[in-house]
Amino acid sequence: MKVQSYLSFEGRCDEAIGFYKKALGAEVVQLMRYSDAPAQAPSGNADESCSGTMPSPDKVMHAVVRIGETEVMVSDGRCSGRAEFKGVMLALTANTDAEAHQWFDALADGGQVLQPLMKTFFTSSFGMLNDRFGVAWLLVVAQPS
Image (cartoon, rainbow, N blue to C red):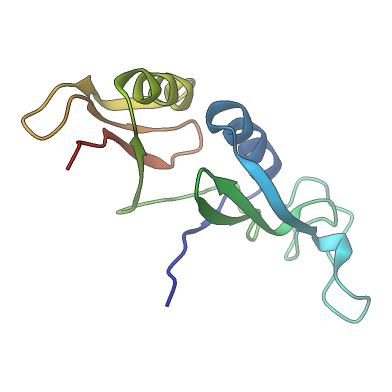
């Protein structure tokens, strides 16, 4: 069994993918736009703003992004413009404090720091933030076993 995260950016998926490429070195493994759907499938409308019942053809219907060893699925969803990621955090485990700081600073750009990176009783660096898209992240440095 495999459990994966699926994030709906509600119209900002291309922007989010670009951000995670830059911030975390993410790699696009698969990307399908609504225009890639067969003709008999619901296809979007010409509304570039995503305000119609179906997203515009240029929006991301489904994508898989690899971040480190993990694949995260993403899409534009219904393009409501209101992405909400309540009650869920993505956790990044760094090997070093320098790596944790690099990722934390990159993800915090345009976002909101909830807990600055700090030393705790269980690790040398721990922090939490919401990135510019509202995705919550927890960063921690792995401790040697």
